[in-house]
Amino acid sequence: MKNKPDDRSNNVERIQHNISNTIRNCELADETIERTDDPHTKEVLSAKNERREEALDGMRKEIRDEAINEKIGLNK
Image 1 (tube, rainbow, N blue to C red):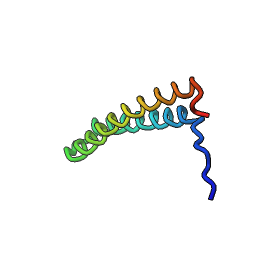
Image 2 (tube, helix red, strand yellow; image 1 turned 60 degrees about the vertical axis):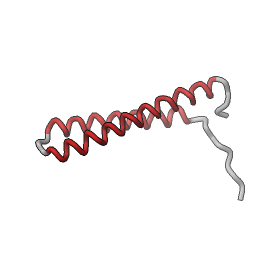
Image 3 (cartoon, rainbow, N blue to C red; image 1 turned 45 degrees about the horizontal axis):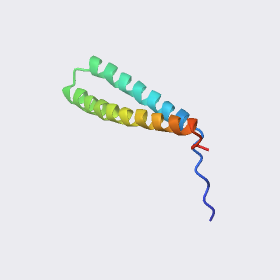
């Protein structure tokens, strides 16, 4: 079985796509929090958004690293 080489050429675009989706999910959750009177729903969605914010921090660090690697030619 041959291993495929690690193709990192589209990592920045892939990570940016994930960041955009995560931000949109946060916005949708915030809208739902504003509309609902259910305290449990508010609590669950707020907790999810906290985890999303942590994930966004990680993705932003990763995209910076990937952009640097791409610039110096390590993502070939």
